[in-house]
Length: 124
Image (cartoon, rainbow, N blue to C red; front, side, top):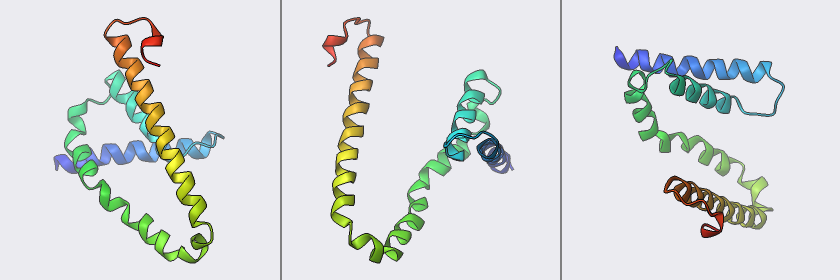
């Protein structure tokens, strides 16, 4: 019963994210609204981590299975994708490297700041 309650909390917050997506006229996915709402509720203590931890861990463990429909969708639309495959590969590689570099630099900056370094030139 504990898992049903935890899943219900997560599902409720996701539903509120969907409602916010339809109300707020910004081009932000509903899942982002739900994630931000969950973060706010966890930080403020309205929801404690213990109230959703086991179900959250379970959902993260099964996350790879959630990519199966997307992979099947790619296989189904292969005819359309085949003509622009090279462009898609190049864009994917460039954006992946860019995201890795930016995330690494930001992480380094945060770690250096946390350790007491004030000079940003040490990081970059």
